Structure formats: structure tokens, C-alpha cells
Image (cartoon, rainbow, N blue to C red; front, top):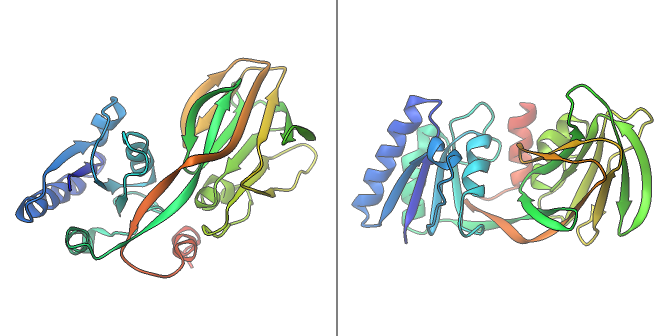
Length: 264
């Protein structure tokens, strides 16, 4: 079992803990490699059997997207502002890693969304895809279609298409529903539309098409920006790939994320 460790550069203590974790892995006789978030953002591809990430949600998402095998199991330790995707905490990091090294864990799989631009796949979304005007502060005209049938023509700030895992992220900030991770569904959430359009929860078997005929737009996949020319068709559907997290405890992960998110 080869283990990769990624740590954020924003907090010195995350780098120090990464070194302690690598020392622990070496004591157990497993091969390992250590990366900084800068390595990941500069294009390093990570090949491993287990990925341990020390950072916030941005570091976690970037690290997952850098995996050569997207279904590599991940364990995240929170060193960020929110850390909603992280189960581990700095104070119990070494004890958590010991459990992983001795096989005392289970895996949970979370659906992703496959995003295509004009019929060509450009990536998978772990949390969400967000479409907006390429000019900040400007509204965007777009059409929502489901399985080829037009649902609505909308004018507003944009639209969020979210996974259940991502439902507690930007979707929740835009008054969308928090959805149980066990459900196979897609959340469609228009952002500040001029005429109110309620968020919709769809079966994961549905294909959503967002057409933007008049303007250039911006497409954000888990926070990573792509410019889109006008007359674009963005197709979003369930991906065959899952995100796999290592869990050390039982209970509802949705409840735990909401507890952090809403400070219950």
C-alpha cells in the first residue's frame, strides 16, 4: 500500500503534521510520498493507494482532482476555515492515521457529476458546477432542459448544479436543500433569478442541459474556472466515477457536515 500525503502551505502546522505522518507511515513500513498544495496546483499527478490530505476544502478538492485513479480512497484532516469534507482533526491526526495503517476503517462512495461542453467532456464535479456571466456582476440568460425537454428560460446571476455531497456547500448558501448523501440525485439551483425559480431535486438518471445563447459565460467546476463562448451547451449528468472517502466513525456524514456548516 503506497500512501500520498498532501498538505496546505497556508498553515505551517499542517506541514509539520505532514512530516509526523510520513514518519509514522515509515515506521509501519509503507512507502509514501509527500506533496504540497503548490505541487498539486502546478500539475503534479498523484498515483497512490491511499491519499491523506491536510487542509481545507479547497486543498481537499484540488488533491482529489489530481489523482490518476479518481476512485483512490481519501482521508482528510481539517486545516482550513471550514473543513466540511474532513473527518480528521489536527488533535487526533496521528491516531486517525494509525487506524488507517491497521485497516480500522470503512469506505463511503459519493456520486460525481460529469460535465460536457458542446458534447466534449471537460471534467467531473465532486461538489458542483456553477455557470454565470463571464462579466462579474452581470446577469446571464440561460435555458434549462431536462432529458432534452425545455424546463425554463431564466435570467439571473447563474445556476448551481450540485451533487448530494456538494449540497451543503455553495448550494446551501444559495438557499438550496441539504440532501442526504445516500440519495442518488442532482440538485438544480438557480441563483438570484429575476423571476423566482425554486431549486429542483432530480433523479441521478436525468441529464441536464444549460444553454447560454447570447453571452460568453464562466463555468466553475469545484471552484476551477473555465471560460465558455456564447452559443454554448453545457451538459451535466451522473458520472460513472465516484469519490471515495475513508471513514473512521459511523453515523450520518450529512448531519456532521451540517453541524460544522451551521454551527449547530
